Length: 113
Image (cartoon, rainbow, N blue to C red; front, side, top):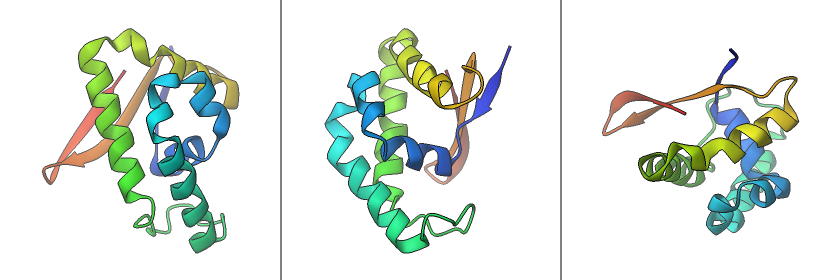
């Protein structure tokens, strides 16, 4: 069983990939925001800023992504399978489980799907 911690950097890369929205149509509503977030992040960091802490330009899209994951999870966790498929197309192996660590109301929370 493979697990993946979906970091901010991975999410930003996903949001900047037009193919993500084709493979995961439940996120199509945030395509413009996601692409703009990615472009602003790359412009600010030069694309080579892993864990530099400069996520402010990406924060709105990251928050919307996590909010939407939570919403879809409450509807049917199976809806998120295309996200795992997309990740699997970009990594050596499709993850069975994905974890997103974030803060909700200032408290750490882990979303798992």
